[in-house]
Length: 134
Image (cartoon, rainbow, N blue to C red; front, top):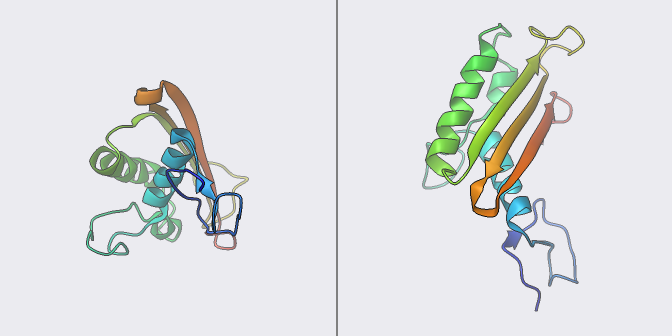
């Protein structure tokens, strides 16, 4: 029987790991959990209506220079509450208001974070447009 921390999302058949692919190290588990925290809309998770940043809703807000700071605050609050084992090193957000080559209602997000328990630094990068939203 295969050993892993959690199923890899989205679920894909992988008979080497059992029925579905598994996350087999802390770094990949942490990255998946952070991505889910960023993409989950508040109210979407059963039994915890406060969980999630809800990145999609920020795509359709008025694109002002203040939007990245508002999103950074939401990310920091959520990580502090739900993933306190992480240390956010930096958050970079590019929108059409901050970068001319990015189309409207699109966003590029890069989060640099440290996992002190395993002494690693990692990155999460999301390129969000209405067409490629997960």
